[in-house]
Length: 290
Image (cartoon, rainbow, N blue to C red):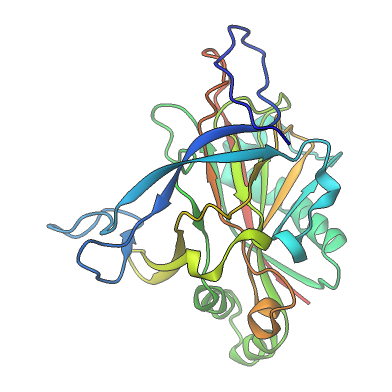
């Protein structure tokens, strides 16, 4: 597949599609070789929000539009779903309560019907991102993985109140899957999501980072640049499409038979029209138990 990059068009309804190149932001180790960390909220006085630098690299991104069925959670740690009906409207996402009452049940049923073997779903949080000034959460523009294996196990213990049940679930297969979708009916034009097929990511490319909340510490993973990584995106995603992003899978940890996680990041496509719609999206995070 030939890689091309074109300049931005003057047509405000243009949807960038096809192969391109773009700068993605990757992890670099702390200069003092200390353990990397970042603070989710304000850091203590005198400490930086994170203690590691980030470096840009230009990479090739191929468009999975028209090839969605080639990818799946077990091989690539992501899966593209189309023609998903929903009772949620744009205004549904203006309220956390309406997201939980209207959209959460749809996500639960989608995961149960899509992921073979799944029998129990716990939706533990969601994030709405709006690409505009003043929005509390913007698209994340650095390559990352949401969970380490330890953080995934801690999530099970955090959300399963009965210690005996938690231990039984930890002994079986459990996954963390993010369900990503645009809020709008119209296709995404700006700040699309890039993701790297897990089949192309070396374990040495991923670095645990302390993710420090006010009352607890989790772990995410930074992604080091590796030219062997296969970066992809799904052009013009619409409100009836869903992208499943697997952040952890205990089966892969135990026997290596399946992929465990998918690096991902928002990116700036240089072909984006100047008057493009700002990206608005939601990701719902789920524990999936067999």
